[in-house]
Image (cartoon, rainbow, N blue to C red; front, side):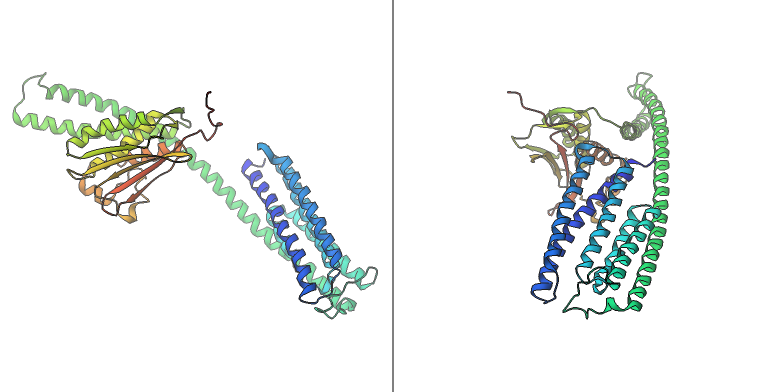
Length: 453
């Protein structure tokens, strides 16, 4: 059974042939005009213009036929589209033969365009269909030049371009036909061989990709179970440490208190890492996110409230600017709040004391643009494309804080991509960096929400 992807690709090829034919019609009409008017080549121009007009109508009919089978999300069968492409190529061979007949026959070097059609057929269709097309081309062109040689049909000489006597030479006619025929079959053989090998490699890559996806899913499930269990154990350890640290289990001396506090800090960092990993894994495993329309201002204010507490410890000033027209976006508010908070936490973490962090929300035609700027350490230019990868930390960030998880930006990217938005980062000219995300205003899967009057 052919896959939907293969059928979709075949549809694109069918439309591509139609677009290519528009160009051929224009070239035929323009070439006839230029040859007669400027190059002084004698041609039966009315017949060639009539052929161009006929091809124009023919191409409109093919375009309408394709639209009939594919318009409005219809899914035409692979066999149906294949038949349309076969019909197109066969029709083009007849059209090319008619053009050659009225423009010099064997004396017209454009008979080499038959080779072009063989290549297209070999790439788009099966080997059997390609050989049948080659046979049809040999029959059409061979029949044309032989009938002109036998003077069964008229020969329209290219006076002003060729001598007009080549079609009288039997040796030239049959020699050209032999070379023409062998060339077409060799082209089909070589092209189909290469195309078959490429298709096999593509199928192998697709199977490997499916296997990798399955293994990645299993890995995520394993990580989810493992991190969930570790989180439970850490929570128990943290609870015990808190009890000891609060001297509920008895008084502690200064040395014991210091050790307990250090253990609590380490446990809290480990808990934060496991929690972030758990969130990221759950997000990967959940194929869908329940979304709705909501005001983006609420997640922004919630994230700011949490980040301000951390910023106050470093005397960092956090400011926020929201354009008045910024209002609703389409998504999951908790996840978006998590993404905004991660950007703010990163900005605070890597901004020196008494620095500034600024959040701006700007209204765009189809989305809301959020920008988090800071006066921090910035990002090495050669690492900008890597910072959203899981567990990746910029080299200068490791010097500032050794114990970062490298998951905050990855979680933010996962959230934004799930919403159909974009996330990127850049360095500011005066120092620090700016992280930007776009969030769509409307659902990309459902119609735009209507206003209530």
